Amino acid sequence: MNDNWKNHLLAMGATLEQGHCLHFGDAEVEKRAALRDHVLCDLSHYGLIRASGEDAESFLQNQFCNDVRKVSASHSQLNGYCNPKGRVLALFRLFLQGDDYLLRLPREILEPTLKRLRMFVLMSKVTLEDDSDTRVSIGYSGPDAARHLADALGSAPAVIDDCLHTDALTVIRVPGPHPRFEIHGSGVAVRGLWDTLSAQAQPAGSAAWTLLDIHTGLPEVLATTQEAFVPQMLNLQALDALSFHKGCYPGQEIVARMRYLGKLKRRMYRAHADTDACPQPGDNLFAEGSESAQGVGKVVLAQTTPEGGVDLLAVIEIASAEQRGLRLHDANGPVLTLLDLPYDIEEED
Image (cartoon, rainbow, N blue to C red):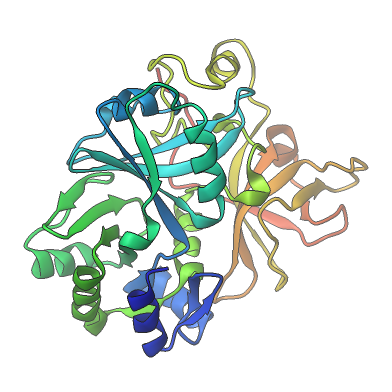
């Protein structure tokens, strides 16, 4: 974390742990504000990988599961990085800053992702660097978030995935229950914007932002879930994060075979459980009466909610989900109630 930004957060009462902001005093108050009002979130739990050089686009195109050629100065995308077996190693937002590409992904998987990508540079004219501490990342969400940003910056992206660049900031509109934006830039510029927006928003930590992801049906791949899912299990085809026409990349044959020749047996669902014990990403789910030690699914993301209980995203066997009777932790654990996702699960050509 940028030292100046760290000091700024501490001065505002932030509780920090392992380089990111947990909350500003009361995570449940922040989550309630995130669902109903305006929140200004520190996003230091994310890091940035910078890819630069004349071969950057072609190199990334050959590594990732979405079509990198569709990224432009005004348009970002969700994208994924798979192993040769088609299992997702990283899920990230990809955007341009000048001629360089930036990958925004969880800090906890940044180093292994960067190390693996560097293994395949070979003769390509591309440089890959950890750019996390040279800039600051925050998020802004709420019913009037677009208007507030337009008042502060003169404009705001109107369409999901679109970008706005100023001299020192990049603003990206991302999916959310309300207008929601990621903002990346210099510490001075981000601090100035934070001070402007904080007059009408609740400061919040990573838990509030994650709860918004869950309500939006946006998955995350963390250290405990790397290589656990193929892209379709995470609904990436429904999130415009997976291309079936872009050409080869690691795991492409397996991903394509599942679409054209196979049948998807697991996919991601949104659910609620009446428990105060929040599961962790990678925890197993079970069906009533199940004797399988592997379970019928895995937690992707989970957060306690202000109203009580836990909201979560989980990859679950479709057959088990249709039969209901799903439980956390073991076959006698808290019951899961499935909830609607805010998008349709339909593969598109």
